[in-house]
Amino acid sequence: MTSPGQDLKNLRDLKTSKYPSNEQRTAEWTEKFDRGRILRSLITAPAPTIFDVGAYTGKSIIDFKGIFPDARIISFEPNPNAIDALRNVARSYSSVEIIECAVTNFSGKVKFYQQGINPGLSGLIPRNIESRDSIDLMRLREGLGGGDKYHKEVNKAELEVKAVTLEEFSNSRQLTNVDFIKIDV
Image 1 (cartoon, rainbow, N blue to C red):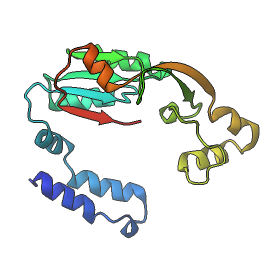
Image 2 (cartoon, rainbow, N blue to C red):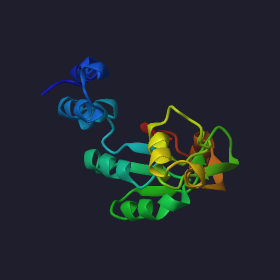
Image 3 (spheres, helix red, strand yellow):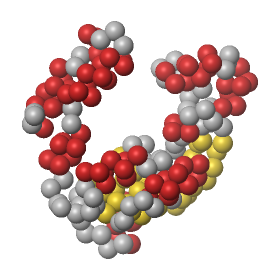
């Protein structure tokens, strides 16, 4: 068994250039890294309060509850296409709350851009349809043969969603302590 410090050293040692594929690098990383041990070293409260910002369909809820069964998890997700799946996961656990809004640096309304092929890539910033950097966009462009099909799937819908700051949310709930904030946006 390795320590959290050793886990981080092992990650630094995994140089992408020595692997013929991302899959092989990921497989070795998975063998050497213990996410639960890292989280337990960072979160010492027996029943922590966790903000899950960008909860999407609830994988983080499952992960956090597996490590911290007594955790209070507050999950923020603005994507209306993900809310039903997120709520279904949350129903399986106690002390999980779903907040259907984006977390930003102001409270109010924001534009949210839904993606057609991969809804997990939806967000507050529209995707650059001409990007050459995004592997996902390159695959989508190639898979749909480019042109109109591709353009219809990228930034498929523009919605207006609620937004809140974590400070305003915490103050409104009189939360004085949050043990961990996971952000995947």
